[in-house]
Image (cartoon, rainbow, N blue to C red; front, side, top):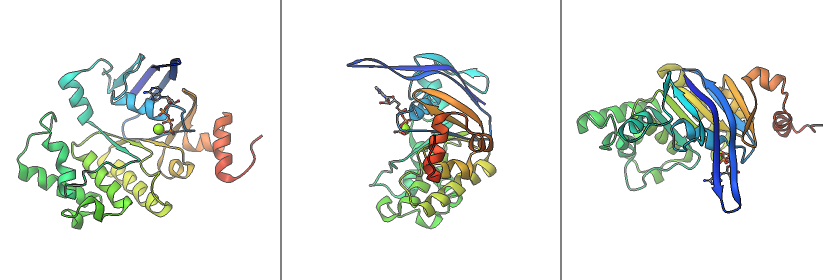
Length: 255
Ligand SMILES: Nc1ncnc2c1ncn2[C@@H]1O[C@H](COP(=O)(O)OP(=O)(O)OP(=O)(O)O)[C@@H](O)[C@H]1O
Ligand SMILES: [Mg+2]
C-alpha cells in the first residue's frame, strides 16, 4: 500500500513560492489501478513523482508497505526506485539501441539492485517481457522502426525489467490514437491482473480512466477535491471541476 500523508510541495520561483501540492493525503491499495485526473497544472505529475521521490515533498510523508520512505537516499533510494517503474507520455527509448537492448537496459545499470544475473539471463528476461507486451518478433528492431503504440509497449517492458510492484503511468497514452490507446490500456490492465502490479495512472482523459481505473482522485490547483470508486465519482460528481471534466467529455454544459 502507498500512503501519502499530508504531502505539500512548494517550489521556489522568481516571483515567490508556488504551492503545487497543498496537504494531500491519499492511499493506494496494493494491486489496484488508481487514477489521478484533473486539468493541466493541477499537480498530478508532481504528486506522482513524490511516490518515487523524484520530487521531494516539502512536508508530509510517503509510506510504502508500512515503511516511511520519505527520507531515503543513496542505495536505499535506488532500491526503492527499482521497485517502482515509470512510463511517460514522451517515450524515451534509446534510438541507437535495439528493442531488446532497450528493455534490458535497467538490468545493466550497476546501481540497480537487480544488476546481477548474467548477460544471458538478462536477455532471456527481456525476451520474456517482450512476449508479455506482444512484441517478441521485434526484439532486434530499432525504435524508429516501430509505431508509437509499439514504442510505448517497449517502454512498458523496460519498466517491468526490474520486476516492480508499482507502475506509475504519467499520461502514457496521451500521444496515441484511440485504438492504440485502447490496446495499451488493455495491456496495462493485464499487467495489473496477471502480474499483480499496482498501477497509478495519471490522465486527463475520462475515457482512459473509465477503461481501467478502479478508484480515482480528482485534483484541482494542488488539492484532491474528491476521491472514490470510479463509478461513484463519475456517477455522482460533487466537485465543480469533476463536473466540468465530465461535461467536456459529454459536450454538455455544466452550470
Ligand atoms: N520545478 C518546478 N518549479 C516551479 N513550478 C513547478 C515546477 N514543477 C511544477 N511546477 C508547477 O506546479 C504546478 C503543477 O504541475 P504538474 O506538472 O504537477 O501539473 P499536471 O497536473 O501534471 O499538469 P499537466 O496535465 O499539464 O501535465 C504547475 O503550475 C507547474 O507550473
Ligand atoms: Mg503532468
